[in-house]
Length: 221
Image (tube, rainbow, N blue to C red; front, top):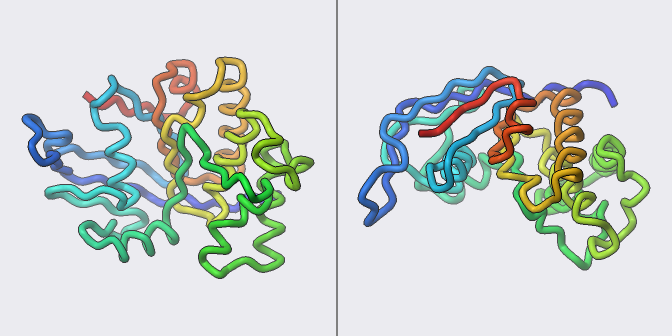
């Protein structure tokens, strides 16, 4: 696979957010600046706002004031339609559970974001196959999710988040449900994907071994 760099600069500027009824804010003037293509671990105690940060960057959650930009484009807030369009252009996300659709094959699950966009042609399908090869499961593309292991499903989730070639790759504890050995294997594949494609990556993790393997560590307090 040829290197196709996706990453763009990510800037979070003076973010303020308090959930309705909460006594304390999640963010009170929080700022973050990441150069395009960096791999940054996001760490901190449970409930500190790690997932909230990813959701704000992805326009899945709103905030009170401040701004978020990716490649100079401002992340929309309080506008679900604009947020959805923004995610299609800019964001790929993977979670603890890959949420594979059980009635579709591995390859069909990979292709689903492109099918939703009505953007699935031969070149795009080949791109999905390339990504599956890159994470070492190209030979499983015709299997159903019930026929692959949890570690293999996690690989599909990581790769699927890249099918639209996003500028930012947001990973919310993608190895959190795996045993330590499998988590280590999936993390190595994550590093391979990042090195090959260079998205700007935020990895939420509680695993210090994984965070130590990233270029930067952002600790929320």
